[in-house]
Amino acid sequence: MNGDELLRILRKLAKARGVELDAKPGRGDHVKVRFGDRATVLPGRKEELRTGTFHSVLKDLGLSKEDLKG
Image 1: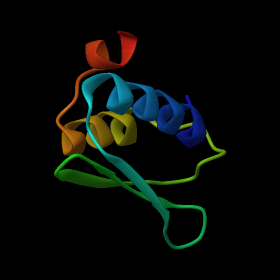
Image 2 (image 1 turned 180 degrees about the vertical axis):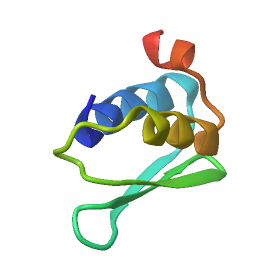
Image 3 (image 1 turned 90 degrees about the vertical axis):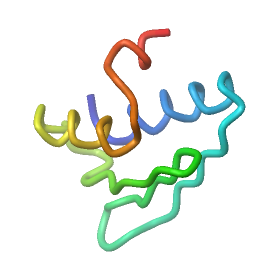
């Protein structure tokens, strides 16, 4: 999964949960993401997210892999 795909899923999840999602450009191709009251940075929107980075992003946002499936 790349950063764009994850961002698309997070937008759908935010809409379903009634949570505000704010995505702003960061340095280079990074994106600053605010999901409700939690925040993180998505690196390399076009590149495949590494497993550890993916889990770290989910942890920062207070989500699990199961949350993304629904």
